[in-house]
Amino acid sequence: MKRIIIKLVIITDFIAIYIGDDVMLDIKDKNIWRELLTTDNPELLEELYSSARIVQKEHYGNKIFARGLIEFTNYCKNDCYYCGIRRSNRDACRYRLTKEQILSCCDSGYKLGFRTFVLQGGEDGYYTDERLTDIVYSIKSRYPDCAITLSVGEKNRESYQKYFDAGADRYLLRHETANTDHYRLLHPQEMSCENRKRCLWDLKEIGYQVGAGIMVGSPGQTIEHILEDLEFMKELQPDMVGIGPFLPHHATPFANESAGTLDMTIRLLAITRLLLPEVLLPATTALGTLDPTGREKGVLAGANVVMPNLSPESVRENYLLYDNKLCTGSEAAEGLRMLDEMMKRIGYEISLDRGDRAGREVREWH
Ligand code: 5AD
Image 1 (cartoon, rainbow, N blue to C red):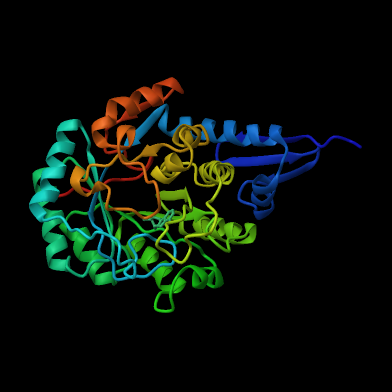
Image 2 (image 1 turned 90 degrees about the vertical axis):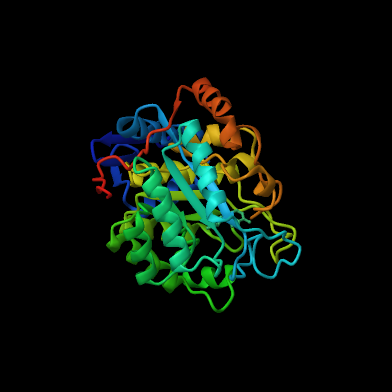
């Protein structure tokens, strides 16, 4: 049997795959994605990862941006079947941080050198638009040189506009899955894939740097679903993409489902790097939880962001979306040096710059 030679070729913006001598496909083509997600050819996979590193280095050199993550509330009105802080989980030990506590996290983060703060929380009605804009405005006034990222779920457009006007620069809202049937399988009736996507388009129109993304290996997910996710991201052109493995949480309906794999997660990170060359792509805590060297492997597949935890130590262990979540050592903001050493061992280094998406204009804030 004639051996098929498969090669990825990068010509500035055009990334092609050669199968044999004559079949050439563009990286924006669904058939390439399917091939890369399913191939068991180790040479092709090595091509995939090295191409992803070339593209990553072309735009960001060997810099890995660190963001200070503040998980400020684990109250949530939603009941997503996969998530450990879903409202039906009566065992969750709930907490919310005051504005002063959040500001004090930013203070310690700023001293450690962080210039991006990510405020993440469940959909908690306590934080009305008024309270949230006040928090955002207070952080931004104190640290005008820092970027603020919000990750507080689905809101209406007016709310998103208010947070933006108060100084929020970026917004993370994983779409979770672009397929409506799959979405139904992961979420209760009152939530919809359509509204999730609407939120992302609103955020983009307002002017946020926007992050979408999915869990890899979530229950019911098929290769065809992942192809739809890539299609959706190609259309949305997000500035950031959060991709991490699904990990079961014992107090959810998915307690007995199996976790996503490292292999599939890093394939998808690499494909995303090639599809959206300038994207900001975190090597997630979930990836580090799944495998002790998961984040390094993520970086070597094209990821260029890490998000160490800046939340007060007393609450860190309560923000549990899945079991066994890492929250000490290099996962903690205080472990920054450890993280830098970890990155240096694989030829990268931590950057504490704001780290906006390459090529993106950043607005002035007064
Ligand atoms: N495993 C992995 N990731 C999870 N998330 C929520 N629950 C889990 C889980 N069990 C992810 C979702 C959400 C993000 C904040 O965390 O994708 O958007």
